[in-house]
Image (tube, rainbow, N blue to C red; front, side):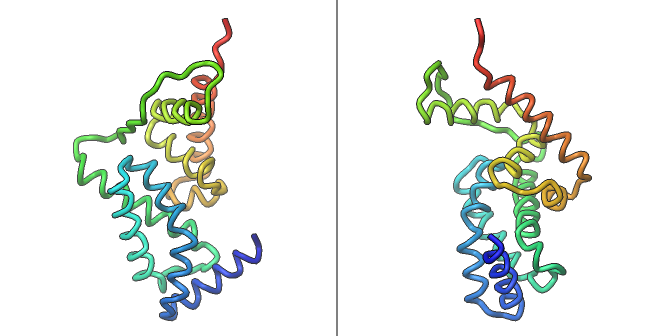
Length: 179
């Protein structure tokens, strides 16, 4: 992991100096994570693909403004966050909350992996948009609390509060019913 971080730092420095190949390598390393994050936020594959392209275009155009090359990943996800919420505001100006519409299916004891996945998606749908994004960034994307605070431009205490309340709710929803 340390070797990869060094490589990313070097690639960011080269890309900021106009090396397109270095930037393309950064894109190939990060595009799947950015797309998956966006898909969970906007809920549409097509929108997530479009926004992913916009994110990397904006990142390329603004790479020289990145003051700390070690912070490339949180900076990139901050762009993704901003782009996702811009799209949602344009498409749903009257909606303050994100609408999360997971696949539907009946969950039952002895679930198969797909059923477990559906149960998690249904549980995620019960979270507020803010809680859901905290879970996606921490659990699905693996960001540290400090990086999440940077991405969402919020105090660390707010990030922790959102995540822990979301995890409590998920635990209650996903815990097996004892009867």
